[in-house]
Image 1: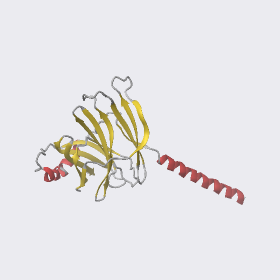
Image 2: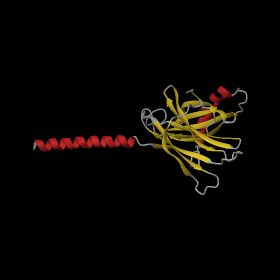
Image 3: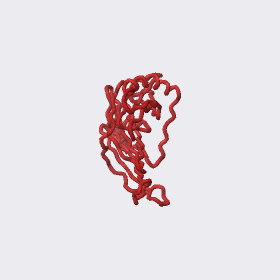
Image 4: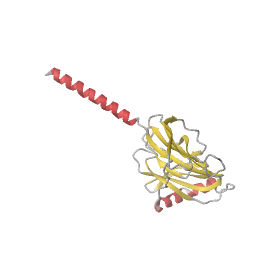
Amino acid sequence: MMRRVRINRVLALLGACLGASSAGTAAAQPKLIYSALDEYRPTPVPAANQDIVRRDVLPVARRLWGRVEGCLEEFRVIDAAYGAFTEAGMSQRAILYRFCETGHDFAKGGIAITQAGRVVAHVTIENAEPDGIRRLPDLDRNGVAELLLVDHAAHSGERSTVVSIVQLEPRGVRPMGLFGVYHDHSGTLSADRTEVASILHAVPGPRPRFELETYEHPEGSRARWIGLEKLHRVTPSPDRATYRRVR
């Protein structure tokens, strides 16, 4: 009888170990972060949330940039993401706004985190002009979601997209790097009229790893996208934007 009990305990322990191992393996699988193969569509922001941002953020933006030369006020809400960004378990909206444009692909704006009818965090963004924002699935496993910023640009016939990852911290904001995910110079005089787009993945962990797979669309090709590079590890580039936590 004792032998049977011991065997059952061993089997239970082995099962628990295998289950933990399987869970760890599943958790380490790459997660889709962004696909440049698909058209980006901003999330509509309810009028009530836009009003909250105007009430709590616009006065701050005016104090910061209202007298900056070349910064003509054209305040608008651009996009939103939903999740817990400052504290685990919270129901929050991260609202991307733009106060003014200061040059080609340069603007002054930021991110307002709203909760229960008020702004609970505010991050300003300069030296970039993001067009979209998305929630990420807590890549570093600290209990709150990171934010993905999408920045489209066009210049002299070339189009490109970069994405940046940022993490809000109790007293600041931590940029986690920038990735180029799309490039098209078919509008230029170049003989090479190939469109290139990538899919970005992340492997969650205290120090997330990033992986990229890339596709191309040569001019005249019947297939919309053709595999160019298989999934491979990549290192983020330094983020060119300036972030500042003002609330």
